[in-house]
Image (tube, rainbow, N blue to C red; front, side, top):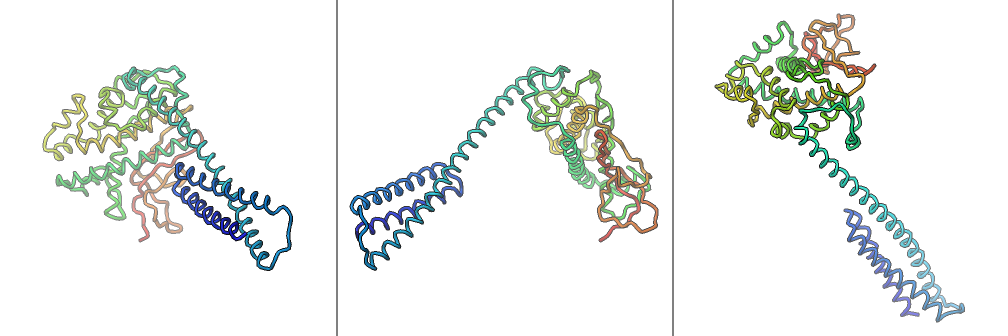
Length: 388
């Protein structure tokens, strides 16, 4: 009996150790370690089961137990209860392992399908010359795209476009400073008679400047791009959005510099960066001449511009993917502020009770209408008070 009890305790200790290894293998999740630990647990459970059967074979009938034997039997019963708990936990872990294996298999299938879609899309783009020959006909490749055309997708694109304008304004202002520009005079030249609450708010004048030029022609299907008068379907616009969305703009242009996207970047750069501005930045017109001749320079300033151009291009492609198409609206300087279709870029403004409604000084982002839903235009209000 003493030998039997000693073997039981040894098995219980080994089972505890194997159970701890099984727990540790789940954090972090390691399938190989889980399998090894699971095997150890099963081996220890098997040994305990063999001991149980051996004991019953040698002791088929109950015998009178001494107090010492009763204590030992009580301890054995406690260990058996603990053993049942371990058995439940092992079954739970085995179920989790099966679930994880199923999830891994499903994800691997999704990866394989995504690779197949990517390969087919790249082949199609090469055949089309990358966005130069849009087809109005829907084809089976539409099913390869998992992104759904929803208002929330467009709202996200609007936010990204505004952030891109904000980001590009920083290197633009820094280069103006380095070139010795009078930023106060430049802000006043962009939009005179705006009363700025703080000098730092004059950055919104440059964001407004970028906005006006980048969104010029947005309401037109061609986006004011020459040689782009071919009517394109909603599906083709969405295909163009999807094709460029995940790509680096410089990679897109390197594959086909004269694509519609390439022409768009070229025309917007020449409109946004005035010759006088470029001459003061670089001391010559080499970059401008290179862009005019059809090139896309790989300098940091132009690459920063391409990120901006890509975000506005994607927003336009997405706007024309909807049926009916998304409408864009602008807010004029001097318009009375309305929180229905306008959003102030300065959030801590103070509106005195009974005072006149503040007036728009600058529009830094147009608004949009998707059906009956409104995406507010972003404006800077002239002469407002701000909380510290």
